[in-house]
Image (cartoon, rainbow, N blue to C red; front, side):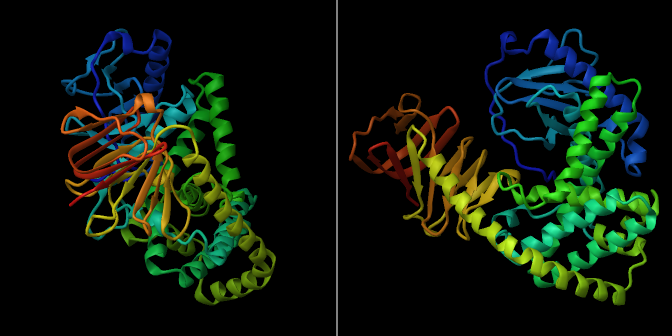
Length: 489
């Protein structure tokens, strides 16, 4: 079973009662879990045919402390103990610094995992539905079916985010979807929806087919899961059983969802992949308005993409598409082309400055060099596509979690920002102050002096609070604050 939001590594720590959150936190999570199950039971099938989020366990992860598990039936997974006073909650202490909100497997069962950044009930409840939808998608996946297939997240590292024409057309798609959602009449909604489809198809015609398919698959995967989340927020706003504060928080998040379409290409701090969290649910909501709920089964039966389902629902034909496209090109390229090129130039400069800032932070600068490896570069045994940013055609910035690897030559994990320069075959990251970084060779602690080298060392390990490296054989070199490790084959 595949879960496609990200990959997650959990590092278990000793279990003690002192690590458990306080009674207020338990009470809040327990109440959220109660309303989550109630709303899921009543409305799952209205969100999507066959969707039963009330049958999916939910794990609320507090990365530095542990995991609270709700809606689990039967014997608890290893390490979990019941939460006293909670309806059906259980707790396991663990450090899970690489955890992300995702659909995952726990004790052999699919689980909706939600990272707790705050106790915002609107965020936690609706995100749990989002991740439960990924569980549903995975269960529904078939080899020839688009629904549930997911996207290849590795395309995040090479997507043409520095292509000005692609960027201005992408921005225009967001504007048209936003206008369609705001339009008061069905015919106006159809008009804007047709214009969106024309621009989308034109952009995909000039784009490499693998990236066009990535767009479509991302909207079918994350976009539809986000649609389930948006539908949940709408249900929360109207739910009289919820506290007024919860309903207000849900309303605020719905407003933010609509705003994201008006500045679709403006978020440069996170991965462009978040765009599909806006375009996917926007198309689904338009289909709700134009075609009613029957569009969902029809789209799956026809094995369509969202944009194709929208074109069919609006009655768009080829001649109309061509006419709309000609008008769009003439009006928008002159207006937006220069702005898009300027935005791309700013993005390049911003990303370069971001890398310089992160690597100039105080602490040990770890460099991993692939110079002695046959491929002259490192592989990836896990990364978070949501937080992978392109700096150039050959350089990527991982802003949170990444596991570079090279067989026995390198096993590593970073929970700090790290920069991968594929052209140079080098990974760089500031991993912490010298007092918190431990280097061992063959099990013995090692303190390298400035300028000191050690060649062909065995069982090399670097341990820091948020980073670790292990290499069977490697060369080591210390220069100032920079520790370079060159794994050997």
